[in-house]
Image (cartoon, rainbow over all chains, first blue to last red; front, side, top):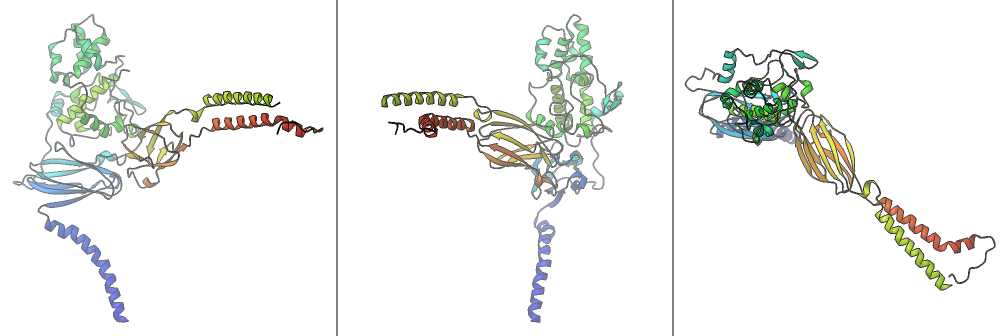
Length: 339
Length: 167
């Protein structure tokens, strides 16, 4: 009897101990030993429950690594940027998405959630630090952005503007709004432009990106004193999108819808479902607020985020090209709103 | 006597035909004609608004689905329609409610701890041509009464006199 009891206890113990040892041993000992490169498991929790764990991954340039992403609570999504073009799509709880990738160059990359998993979804990011094997102790520095540097050199504070404007429940010095009564439309742009004297400088994309549509409107008005102001505004709208193909790219629209629409609204009216929760009222991409706005300031706001407004920074996710495409889409939303 | 009866029957049959045609062509409300129903359905943790809606079988249903906080989904049981909705981007779901019954729609994206309980109900009422059927029944009863009237009146009158020739 005592012998049978001993066998029973041994059986129970072997299950209780053997099972965890086998599974954990496989995950943490056998699999890493079998794998030719590092396998890193990243568990995704909702941001209020910790976000990605771990939040920082350090690699050496040239190292191949397998990143396995798990979702622990709700549906998450993973993409890695900027400029890597890695999008693993949605991850349901219990599911694992993995990618094996070789990071060739030293630098900073971000893995970020692509699904609105909570109201703090946009805080859910992790950093991949790819260090130079020659100096493994020095961290790669974030690259400086020439556009933002130029704005700083020009003395433009991208957070403040001369006049007030409404925010949640009151005036705020960081928002300028004009009441021109103009509703320029890009579809009328080409017709409006024919027959107008257009200053050469307006053809320069560089100039347009560093100036506001209102300034362009004034320049046009000087040359065409007798032209109707609404027509001139249409001409400016046409000019402002003249370097883009007629319709915004599907990828840009998808990016706007996934990242911006929750606050700024699908049509850019500043009326997304989360608009009431932000520290400051989300900007509306409408003529009154956009005519006194510069493209490079919009670019800087997207790249660096808005201080104290709850506007996240996307510079760690998007390349400059992707950001400019978004800026152009904001102008497109502004200049196609006229009913 | 016999000829008179036949004439009367023919006249009744004629009336029947006219009335039946009238009922058939009568534009009765609701279930008679198929509609296109537009519905705004909002998803938030952890409920749908409205949680229940009713359509008639055969109606075309256009749901404008929106999400107010996080990503949600919409899965309609039995119809097998699934859609994912990102906050800020309205999704349009268009389908014909061709099956009658009570169907649950549920969130199909794990949106939080109470996600399994995020359920709504679509009621598709059977599109029986009820009013028309009722009209036909009344018509048939009326005809029966008219046909049997002489019998009945004779049977009910106090000085009962057997009616000759009729049966």
